[in-house]
Each structure stands twice: as structure tokens, then as C-alpha cells.
Length: 491
Ligand code: GBH
Image 1 (cartoon, rainbow, N blue to C red):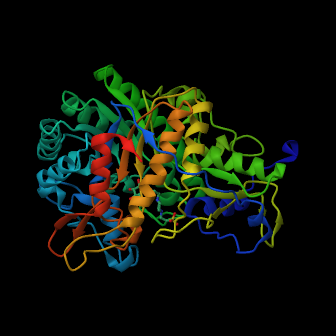
Image 2 (tube, rainbow, N blue to C red):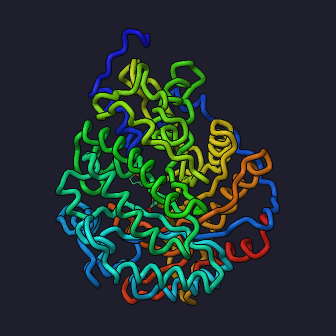
């Protein structure tokens, strides 16, 4: 009944929350789940192309530490972690992996793993403590040194301009729902690219805009911990504008620079074969996967609601959609797990709006209780490839948390991570065979690190970090991945 649809804030909240944090669990034995069971495709060996890039990814706040050194300002994540009750175990990233001081050791690790691409991010408050004004030369120097060390090691730097550490002062000025942020961000992007664009050719503008807008401004489980739905929607629009403006600003500095973004994506699988569930899954895909991609490539919001998008609530003005345009040179995709999507909430009956999102639990679960289901990754990659005309794709993140720690001999036998990587890289190979143009894979993460609201309770690294003394030890999965990177032969 699209004609009679009116935008209902409460419905939307409940549905988007489900998708946001994976809060809903489909009850075991619920009739929906039985229709979903599919058999995983058998693994098939794959020889990756010679020029395929093998990488690892990290982010400034999660690894750097040195939170107030050399003129760095406070970020919303410093503020959040320093607030009682926000992060598990009262953990902070004041020190984290201390990569601000140990970056050379970390580049050595990348070399040992035979990797030729490293995705890292720049901390905005290191460059502009308050988010405006003159750049801090010491902050810029750090990233110059890091980039030069990578280049000497023949590792391609892939630099993300924003991986969630907004200067706290800008949050106090209204944060991402404030339209001024688009200009502030563009100015910051220009500073970084003017300084580092001579040595870094590949850029991601934002990391996971969906996550930092929805979890930061709507569900509040991430910094800046606001719980205001219309603020969140406004933030998504400002971020879309910022994305377009930063894209043009970078190209104006040097049109040869390759500019992309890192989108969080999750295969949205209808809970049953009913039309209602299929449509719900399409809406979940529109909001969760392409809300920041569609405006960039098509100058319009995707069809996420039974009616049209709540443009007024989002603060969309005439001419804005042109500002959002960003014809990316490549799409970065961060992929972790699929979601089951239903139009029906168990026990609640039919929902005329939105969708309900459930964590799938058919496959094995990681220690973060995320389902391992590689086929869903291949499907998502082929869908994006099909719907956006075969763009160049880089996997900018993919990984899993397992808590394996050193045995008596000091070795870390994390076979489950090896199985995960083998499965998910198999899915990448499968998608390439079917015509997707995928040129790089970055494992999340190089190091065990500060996992946001989870603190140090999750370990995503191929390298174990002993946070008592900062000792790094390559896990078995790291050695396995290193061999694969050298041969390109997944078997
Ligand atoms: C990516 O986020 C991030 O880019 C990276 O920084 C992070 O370390 C990595 O993945 C691993 O998480 O949804 O209920 O499980 C992925 C999105 C958002 C997933 C927060 C974990 C925690 C709450 N992440 N979410 S829940």
C-alpha cells in the first residue's frame, strides 16, 4: 500500500535498531528459520591474479595510543572511553597498541607477512586539535613517516581520512547532524591530501558511514552516544554531502589520486520466500548497504521506505543531491556477516513499514557470536558488482574475533581464523570467477586492538598483542596468510 504509507518514526526506529546492532535473535525453531536453511557451496581452490593486492587494515584510534601527545586534541572516542560506563571493562585506547611509537615494528610485521598493501587511518584531532584552523605539523609528520616507511618496504599505503575519531570540539558544535561539518571535513581532507598526496595515491574518504551515524547518533552504543533518530538521519545526509565535497576537493588537488570509500555491508537475506520478506530485505539492503553509495553514484537516495525517503526530516535541500555526487575510482567493502530480514516480527504480526533484522546462526559462531557463512560474502559482492556496473572493488576489511592466546611454547594456533579466511577468500575467488572486478583484500586486522565499545574483549588480529608489555606475536593464521600472499594460491 505505498499510496497510504506515512512515515512512522517509531516503526522505523525499531526496525533500524535491529539492523543497527543485530539485537534481535531469531528464536531457534521459529518457523521462519526452517525455510532459510541452505547448503554451503563446497570450497573450490583458486589462483588469485598476479597483481592482486594482499593487505591488512587498522584504524588510528584502535591502535595508535598517544591520545594526547604532540598536540593531539581530544576525539569523541577519547571522550566516550573516558566516560564511566561506556566501554566494556572501562577500557580506553589511551595506549592501545602504542603504534604511534611502534609503527616501524608494525611495518616489519607487514613485511614478514609478505603483504603489499596496508590500510590505516588518519586521526583528525592529530591534524587539527579542535577540528578547525592551522594544521599541527607534528601530527602530519607522523603520517609522513608512516607512509615513507611503508613505501620503503614496497607496501602500498591505503589511507582512510575518517575512521570515527571526530574532534570532540566539533561534536560540541553539533557533530555530524550540523551541516557545517561538511565544510570542516573537506578542509581537513584538503590539508591531509595536500601534505601526503605526493606519497599516498589511494584514499578512502570515510570508514563505514552507516555505522558511525546510526550507532553514534541513533542507538548511542558508539561515540558520541546520542540517541536521537532525526539527528541520525540528518547526520547521514551531511555525511553524504561531505563525501561528495571531499571527493571533488581531493581530485582538484590531483586528479590522478584514486579515491574510494569503505562501506560496511552485510548480505540481507529474506527470512522466507514471501514477497513481503523479499521487499523487506531490499529495504534493509538500501539502508544498511547503499545509503552512502547510491547518492554518490546516482545522485539520489535508494528506495529504503515503502514511500519515499523522509527527505525533509533529513534536511535535504534542493541541489543537495548533486553535491553528494562522488564517482568513486573504487569501492571499498567491509564485510563481516549476513543478516536474515523479515517483514514480520515474531509475535508481533505484520509490519507495514521497514524490516526486522536477525543474526543468522546456521553456521559456526566466532567468539563475538558472529556467524561464519562465506557464501553470503560472494553473493553480496556479485550483487554490488551487478547493480553498480562492475566497479573496481577492494575488500577494505574482513575478519573475525577469536580469543586464542599463546600456548606454553608461545605459539598461537588459531585454526578457526585460518578456516574463516580460507572460506571468505574462497568466496572472493568465486566472485572474481563470476566476473566481479576485485583487486585487493585487507584482513581486519593486523593486530589485536581496541574493539570500540567492546574494549579489549575481542581479538581480531593476525598478530597477538600482549597488552601488558606490547609484545607482538604472529598467530598461525598470520603465517598461513603470509604464505597465501606470496603464492596467490588458495587451496
Ligand atoms: C568494523 O566495524 C570497523 O570498521 C572496525 O573498526 C572494527 O574493529 C571491525 O569492523 C570489527 O568490528 O553490531 O551488536 O555486534 C564493523 C561494525 C559495529 C560491528 C559495532 C560490531 C558492535 C555491536 N561494527 N558492532 S553489534
